[in-house]
Image (tube, rainbow, N blue to C red):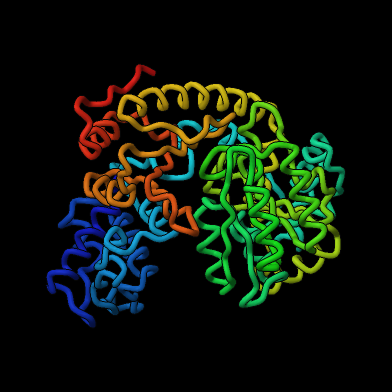
Length: 467
């Protein structure tokens, strides 16, 4: 929504851009500008104060406001569109995050705003109006909110993972959790195993740490066990990074048999497993968990709240054995002094502790089940079929017909304002060029199906099923 203050600022920016106002020149007085723009003087004062905060103008007491900075030039990354770069693990992330409100995002990795528990979040925010001053102004303690860690420990105990809050460290995000673990356990040149395909940001982050990435083909029941054991013997990896529940991007679920065999192989090869548990709340019933079966001996559990609660409140967690938590806490203090935001963790703790949150999850699972079935049927009319039917979650990992290159389809889609997620951004071996990952919660617009019909040369348009 525009305001009169924004209108005034835009008017001044236009004068900057046109050259009518140059560095060193004096702006109109508050009273004269208010009269010419037919606004109250207080509105001009607010506009000038905000321009001063942005660094464009400066007040000289008794003299007025003066221009101190020329109009900003577009940054280089805006001049070189991300869509034109090579399709790599960051391609989908940047297009999805930078997309405007008109762009369709069936390739993104989060739910639409109207699927999230915004009423409960607003209720939690209102509670902060009476919070202690320290919540509003101070740093967090080094391991993060005791209240939220207690809540997580109780949730883990219900799964059979009996640990105290002292074995949990809150982090700035799920991604930061992985980054801290990599800083602690890896050095450049080490080897890390990932699933092939895997979440594309695993690859992007591991490249930052300059490690060797080895992919193990993923099957509907977990990683290919024979090739997993072979990779352990051949490459001697330090870490294995995976989702065991509702795997990203495939939606598959690891079986108990596969989980036990992976843990046995890891123990014999001194392999640490990082289990990203971010999708667990979408499961209809809990599946086998490496962290639970292992008791956090060789396994580190990480997660965040961005998928079911809010991506706006950045907070993740690490659950691990005590000596690792101690070392990771030191690392977080060194790299992110104060750890997580007390405001953020208070909102999350209140919302998760609200009785409405469990009802939200139940409704969310039901809604996603309907959407997966509907989207699967509609995609089938385009000749696009899932590799596996997931037990839950919002992803469908689908193969395109006739060997079509998903990267070419994704580029064409973006030219029509649609962000798709092509298979090779997830694949270390680039063996998924015929696949797309669809987010079923973002598949309600018929333009997505219209584009797919045209791009794949389907004889008749895919029809969007009634919702």
